[in-house]
Each structure stands twice: as structure tokens, then as C-alpha cells.
Image (cartoon, rainbow over all chains, first blue to last red; front, side, top):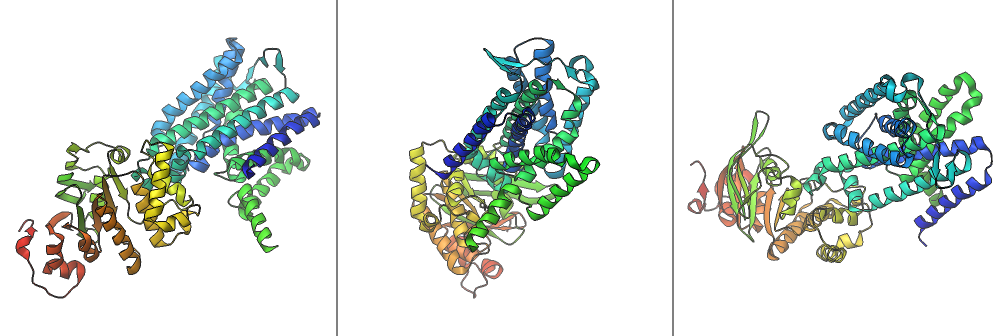
Length: 313
Length: 250
């Protein structure tokens, strides 16, 4: 069995055992949030880490997924699973419309463009009160059911979220190992050379943007049916920044990096509760420290250090 | 096979290529030589669809390339080896080669055979197949760039300054490979500043100056031309067979 398969099996095993062993509801809840954040980081990592495109407005797709399912299943009463399909289509459609002109930009300009998009969507969530519930939020999101199964938080939701995460990791890996993945790496490194080989850089970037929007929408769907109450602040500028931080801290262009980034960014605030008013300062200092010591992100940084240590030993 | 008629390319107000006309027949090796800023690389980019021609026409196998994207052009059988190699440094040699066939629809078996052919043509790439391409030497990177372009099974191979920044021994090796490809039937356009080496292996040549073709003719005649020698080769005076050459605008 190759190394990668062993890692994958180990990862699945750890998650399955964790779900069985951990009975504390709070811990299960935190680990469910890690799963949801992993989905967000995976999607953005495909765009930032592999295609080399910055998005500072990805919170919008997270919100579109959450509000679409909230409105369709909570207000209109349609099945949440059908609402999920609609949410994905909506997010992908919006990504197509926004990405077509925006992805012709690059660097800071692309960052600014996506930032503006994220802000507009955030304002829409706040102002379209009749659909979204406005600034006070949306109440009345139904719990997820699948036949006799009721996903009401705790263990069942934990497994649901992580099953989706496994699926997303598998999908990302398949894409990255295909010729599309190679083309993504090529446009990240040398876009002109990739174009000269016949890679249609713009449509490839747009496709990845839509794919990451779809993953964001799925994360939004899982979030909405988990917390059962959503408000615009969960999908604003800070949410987008948090996603970027997860990708950068974990390590760009690494599927495992997305997972590590999600673990760190979800767990740190929980661990730092003891610092009370100084929590955010300590949080910021830790992130700065990681970036100074391991600018390539935790995953690659730790692996490189381990390889150096092994070579010396 | 390739025909350019009065092609003009501009960057804003600057005209980089000004009314270039040239023709390349099937199986030929044609060199386009000229000094820095003569418009060679812009002409290369125009042929490959990386720069849109402002005016004029580029035809390949009788069909116009106007409005076609680089991917369409690669699909029609033109492959390019860009200036400065432009290999994908973090990717392995194998991945770089596979990217060359991005536009080609082929079975896994056919792709494997193509890879094997490249490894045969450039044995060093076979030895380094899993190594990141950025760790290869300049000469090896140039071989990889050529191999990558050949993966698309082109009918026309356009090379931009393949000798740039390489040691004379490596340049000779690269040019030997180009000759070998030509012998295998690949039509080649070689855009070069190293006029002596480029004309030595070419059938015909064009001399570009400030965006215009100023001289064209057989490679042998161009090599003996006094003006070409003084401007681009720096050789000793030799009987100039100017009657064999076509002086543009003379």
C-alpha cells in the first residue's frame, strides 16, 4: 500500500474513532466547525494555492449557501437537500457572473475586485430583510433529516460534515492529479507559458472559482442546518479574511494544509478564551509568529523541518 | 504551410512589427534573425496567437489564424518553444512533458508512447523524469522546453531564441537536435539572435530590422552576405553573392 493511501486511511480512522470516543457535545461541536471550515479552506485553497488567484470575498459564497438553504427550506418549506442543489447552482451561477470580468484582473486588483463583491453581498444579506431576516438574522432553519436519520448536532452531524469533507478532499485530489491540476499549477507558475501550450487560463481560473464557490455554498448549507440561526456578520469581510488566513497558515497548494489551517484557526480562539480581553492580541501574535518562522505555512514548514532533522540524525 | 502577409503588430503607439511578409514551406527550416528589438519575438508571439496582429494576415495550411486563441492554434498543429525556456520549475520533468500534450486528445497508451519518444530523443530527461524541472541545468531545461512542445505532435515548431544564455557546447547540441527534428519531417521556424548558428542549419532565412524584413534568401547566401556578417556574425569579408538575395525596399 502506498504512503498516501496509508495517510488517507489513518485520517479517516482518526475521525471515525474521534466521533465514537468523544462524548462531550462542546468538543463534537468544535470538531464539526473544523470540518465546515476545512471545506471553506479546501475551496479557497484550490483557487489561491493552486490557481494563484486571490479572493477576499469568498465569505459571500459561504453566505449564499447558508441563506439559500435557509430561505428555501425555512421559508418556502422545500426539502433541504433540494435546497442544497439550488444553493450550489446559485453560488456557481454568481461565481460565473462575477468571475468572468473579475478574473481578468490579477494581484491586488483581483483582491480589490473580490473584496468589493463580498461587501456588496454582505450588504444584500443585511438589507434584504424580507428574505434574509436582515441584521437580526434568520430564524427557523429546519434540522436535516435523511429517511429515519435526524442530524441534530452532536455525533450524527459530526459524521455528516466529515463525510462531506472526505468527499471534497477526494474530489480535490482527483482534480489535482488530472491534466486540469497540472494546468492549474502551470498557470500559477508561468501563465504566459501555460497559455503558449494551449491552456485557456481564463476559463480554467473561472472553473476553479466556480468550484470553490460550490464548496463554499456546501459549507454554508452545513453551517446553516447546524446552528439553525444565521446572521449577515457570519459571512462578512472577517469571514473572508478568516478563510484566507486558514489557507495561508495551513500552507497553500496543499490539501492537508487546508485541514491544518482550519484546525488551527478554529481551535485557537477556543484555546485562547483564558486570555479574555487580550484574546485577539495573542491570536494575532501567534499568526504573525507562524508566518515569520514558517512563511510557507504550517504543513510544508513542519515537513521541511522534519526532513532536515531526519537528514541530520 | 505558413504564410504571413503584411503583418503589423503594435504595443500602443509603438509598432513592433511593421508589414512583415514571409512564407514557410512544408519540411523547411526557416530562420528569422535580427538584433535585439528587431521585432522577432513579437512576430513569434503573433504566429502563436499570444499577440494579436493589428493588420495583415497569418495563414497556416491555407486557413487564416485570425481571431484564434493560442489553444486553437496549438490544436491546429503549431507548437511553440518560448524565449527563456519558460519551464514550470516546481513541476516534475514528467509533468512538464505532459502539459505539452494538454490540447491533444489522445489515449493513455498514445501519450505513453509520446513520452517514451521524448525520453529517446532526450535521454537526460528520462534520467530526471521525477525531478523538479527547476533543478535542471539551462541546457536540460531547453531540451525539456523543446520536448514539451513536441508532445503536441506539431506540424510546425516555432522556437524563440533557443540558444539564449547557453554555453556554446550546449547550443551546438540544441541545434543538432533541431536539425534532427527537421530530418524527421517537422517544419521549423527558428527565431534567433545567434545568426551564424541559426543560418548554418537553416534552408532559408529572413533578416528583421526595426520590425521589417530587410533581407531574405537562402541560408547559405545570407551567411555569405557582407552586411549580415558585419551586423550579426562578425566574420571576415567574403565574396557577397548579393544577386542570390532579395533586398527588401532596395
